[in-house]
Image 1: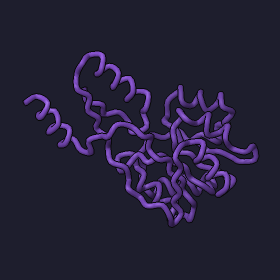
Image 2: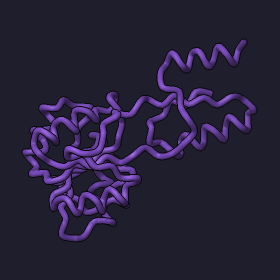
Image 3: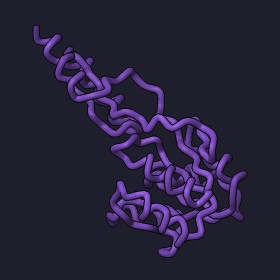
Length: 185
């Protein structure tokens, strides 16, 4: 079994590991590389979403979230009530409904399919008056470098949530193919 889920899809990966174990087959994980952006120069790292909320609350009042909807509740509940949130989410009904149930107004929801360019990120941060940006380290594929570059351009601190610990992953499709060939030989 090759697990190629999103780097933050902990539940799906655990289920895949369990399924492989029950089926008595090999489990391989492809994990797209992180953005490899060092801390400093406006970039802060958090070990999880609750810590990201605490860090971002120290850095500004208006927090622009690009973390999706899965951890939105725990993030919002960890923030002091005087903090404002704008959430950039995927443009699907379920995500928008989830945001509305959490108390976000339509003015606090940006429904947009990413990844997007540095220029569009910068324009969104400016349009919504972001004082802090929060993102997952979804790597180049997920547009993390463009978010960091836009935040730096606008002189806005950005908090990156570290990837959850998990089994070591293979870092390229070529490594996955080589591992499968090795298993089959």
